[in-house]
Image (cartoon, rainbow, N blue to C red; front, side):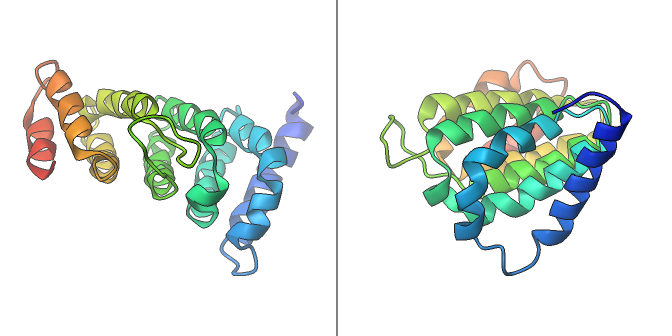
Length: 190
């Protein structure tokens, strides 16, 4: 990663190329998995780029790549490098990016292999799951109703991982919300 306008344009062009290439059927999870270790630092750093379009495109790239990679190619260490960067985008200055990262977070949950306690065969344990939920639940009470709705969709997908733990987390934040309606609706689904 380099500073400067020229480097910024290169990152934007790279993100645009990836967003056009990933929908092609030739880039299977197996092919993507071969380059994941090397590419992951670059992908996550572009999520924090100064250029909003680069950040938006990188969210789209990860939303396409994560389901293809699946839990078999994303170990717990890689997942722990990805999800904090995605949660940061929920605080982005651009609502378009905040909405786009919700799709990426939904894709992330499609690539999860969960175990309540750490085991090598899973990539998400209870502690990390609760961390992700807590990061999401802050935004269920967002002042923007569009963001509230998008984050609620993410929580619905996250809920499928461990409904009792998700319900506990929802109950813990319910009374701190401006309006508990969304938490109540999510609790009904849990």
